[in-house]
Length: 274
Image 1 (cartoon, helix red, strand yellow):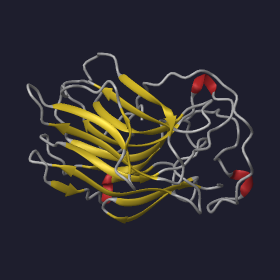
Image 2 (cartoon, one colour; image 1 turned 90 degrees about the vertical axis):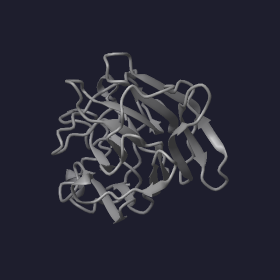
Image 3 (tube, rainbow, N blue to C red; image 1 turned 180 degrees about the vertical axis):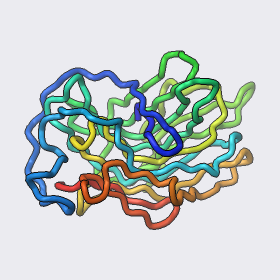
């Protein structure tokens, strides 16, 4: 959210979120880490400092997408994330999203259009959000819902271009998967993108490295599945995220983050200690 990951493709993390400094309640003790002794666990230790790296991402990008795409959707099994205490300058957040992007273009930082849910310091629950960066130096647009995203619930996060007269338009919204009923529609979507997408992303992201919960816990994981993008004629193409397209920052033996992929669009994200 509110940023980009750094990979071999030279992605650069960015920030568009400014939140107030707040004090959160002390975390409940978690289960032992699967990766390291409890004394060395990084997750949920309480103090956000030190902030040492870009926002870790746990998911993937789809390079097969074409510039004339009509959008992207993924089903997401959501969680209520646990954030670090005493965020320094508001450096705390956790999110899950789908996104259309364009890489570095004419010296610009990058462009993106995303929808998902996010938990910010002081929030008891995640909320729905949309963010659009035109990449032209213009202000980044971010909308937040007033409604909570339910935990352990299947939603569909959708970015889609619709036919209309006189102009086509883009919309970002969240559907309850069980009924297809809209839960939230962003109020300030761009009418048209000022750029052509060259890939798509599905990911979980934390703002403070190794101190915020990414995804779910060991026994109840954030899950993405049934992801696809649309061609210009609305033909659906399943996401096929493979190899280097899969990203898992601060994962492995050092922990605390983990991903498990089952196919090109089905994967789980969780944080040790929960």
